Structures are given as structure tokens and as C-alpha cells.
Length: 473
Ligand code: ARG
Image 1 (tube, rainbow, N blue to C red):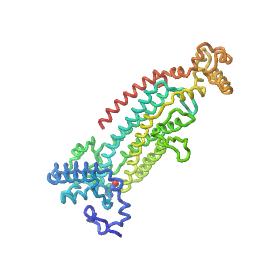
Image 2: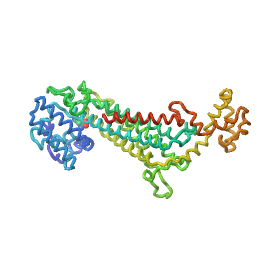
Image 3: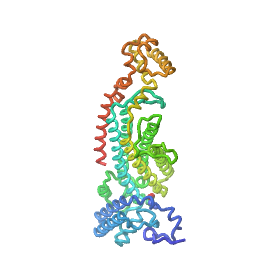
Image 4: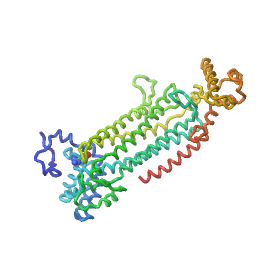
């Protein structure tokens, strides 16, 4: 068995006579995953060292050496010259070992009153706060692009669907804004995940707290945490703040996936509602005519893995007794993946939305099929005093006749309408005019031009308010 490259007795080896086998050493290591927490680990250690000195637990000189040494570690990681060694097990060990090799005994004092259990919880919370702030910004950008595409296409009328069957005509802008509201709620969920991560665990030590007179509030202040944990067992052993983030990511991915699905079929030859830009399409290696919406499909596909990340962590956590258990080392890979996946998908979706061509004529053509003015025609008869049930029956017969003859409701003359009911008058054809059908839906949140204009204004207002919130994260 090859011996580890360096002796990890330096860190926790006092109790040990042998080394783990190479394979188990690698099996137990989280360094390949958690190395991305290096900034957070260094920030946390610097704050801890300064606090130790302020409390008189270590000397000022030691704290200065530690901080300067950690800055050198950060610089070498940034420069790519840091030596990553799997024998370090995790990012905390890697940084502390390198620091101690650099500054000597002072490095060994950094871990006073601290455990990797409260250290990893602190690093991960710091990371989760930064990740949610970044996601919040991406969500704002996507909402802006949805609002823009709605504003740029104010008159495009398209079919609205239920059961994937044409139901009633709507404004394309209304459809785009629907998604902007979903992503506005995703923003709220991401901000909530930020708040749940915003609690400092450091000072909980391994599980029970510590005998050193730590000033936890001072550490919190330095690291920008707004609260400190109130129970050391809870602080080192829960990962619900990551579940909150996973959940926020999962719901946002589900929304992205639905929008992606619409882009996929809208860009098909049968629909042709949009033309995806070449930038976001791929060809086929065999069929020269193909232009595939691969990126929309990938977003739809990737939603599954993010839901998987949420599920995996829930299952990892569900049977664990208090306090820290090594199982919890499995927490990070999934949440990193969830955040990376969502970040990338938000970016790609924004690109697709801002570059797609909206084919207004095709949408309008489709809006004239499917007898989508039938409800309004029935309402017209109701306006003449006919009970709704009877009106429904009359219009049902009109639709059946049109269907047999391949006609649209809009093509019927007044004389033809009168064959079904003598209640139809001059204004009956107005009832089925697609633009008027749309503009009659004037309820707040409805699809009329006037309602959508108001909706657009409130979507912009909400966006501005959320930008404010994001700037404070
Ligand atoms: N690499 C570990 C993790 O990610 C750090 C905490 C280790 N603590 C321990 N008691 N083994 O969970």
C-alpha cells in the first residue's frame, strides 16, 4: 500500500498509529468537491483568528501571521500554484496544513475553540448566501427579458390552451408575463433560502460548544451573518438551509422546463409561433433540413437532475441522529450541481428569449382556428336574454356545422348565423372578432390590451423592488 504523501498525523493523527489504505483515504475525502469552498474557508478562518486574538485566546502576532498566511494561501489557489493533495481529505485540512507549513506554530493555534463540524457548516452557509445572491441576479435578468419580449410584441394574438386544445385567444405578451410572475416567486424563494442560510454556526465547536470565551457576535459581524445559532447541536447537524436552496432551485427549474417545453413545440413546423435563433439551435448529422431546439430540450432535461439533488439530500438527512455524521459530507455535491445547473439554464433561457423571432402572423392564423370565440358568441346570445345553457347548445350546433364544412366562426355571414338563431343581429360578427374577444377580458390579470398594459407596469414595478432587495443580499 503506498504511504500517503505527507503525514496527516499533523492534524488529527495523535490518536492514530496507521494510515487508512489509499482507496479508503480517497473514498473518505471530500476535497475534490469541497475545494470550491476555499474562499469561504479562508474568510471564516480569518474572522475566527481575529476573534481569538481580540479575546486574548491567541496573541495578536499569531493572528496577524495567520491572516497573512491565509492571504498567501488564497493567492496561491487563485494563481493555480496551490498543491492539492487528496491526503488532506477536505478543504479545511488542505488549507490548515498548507498554512501551518508556511507559518509554523501559529498555524496550529487557528483551530482553537473550533471543530471542522462548525467550520464546514459555516463555510457552506457562507457559500449558500453567495450562491443565492447570484441566482437572485440571474432570475432578475431573465424576468427583464420576458418583460421586454412582452413589451416588444404588444399586439401578437395567439391561442391560449387548456388540455393542449385551443381554448380562448390571448395576447402573446400575457403568456410571456405569466412566466415572469413565476420567476418572480422563484426570486422570493431564493431570497428566503438566503435568509435561512444567514445564521452563523461557528462557535458551536464539535457539538456542545466550547470552553474558550469566544465572541461569536464578532465573528458574525466580520462574516456578514445577521444572526448566530442558538443551539450548538442544531447548528452543526442540520442542512435544512441547503434543502431550502435545493427546493428553490427545483421549482425554478420546473418553471424553466415548462417554458422550454413551450419553446420546443412553438418552434416546430406545425406551430411555427417562434423561430429560434441559430445561436440556440443545432443541426442534424444526417438530416440536412433539421434545426433542433437542443438547448430548450436540455433545460427541460436538466430539471430532472435538480429535483434529484433535492431528493438525494432529503434522503441523506432523514435518518441521521444528532449531531454531525459523516453522511452529511454528501450534502455539497448535489447543491453545487443544483445551483450550477440553474445558473446555466437561466442564462441559456435568457439568451433564447432575447434572440427568438416571434411569428405574429402564424400565431394569429392559429388563433382563428379552434372556434375559440365560441364562448363569446354564446355570451352574445345571453346578452339578448337567452339562458346560458340554451346559448351553449345553439353555438355548439354552429361549431359542429363549421367543423363539417371546414369553416371558421369568423367566416360566417349574418345570414348564416341567423339560420341557427334569429337573435343574432348586426353586431353578432363583432362577438367573434378575435381581437375583440381578447380585449373583452378586462378583469385585473386578464388578457385584454388594457389589462396587460397594467400588468406590464406592475411586473416592472415588482422587478424594480426586487432589484433593491437583491442589492442588499
Ligand atoms: N469534510 C467534512 C464534511 O464535508 C467536514 C467535516 C468533517 N467533520 C468530521 N467530524 N469528520 O462534512
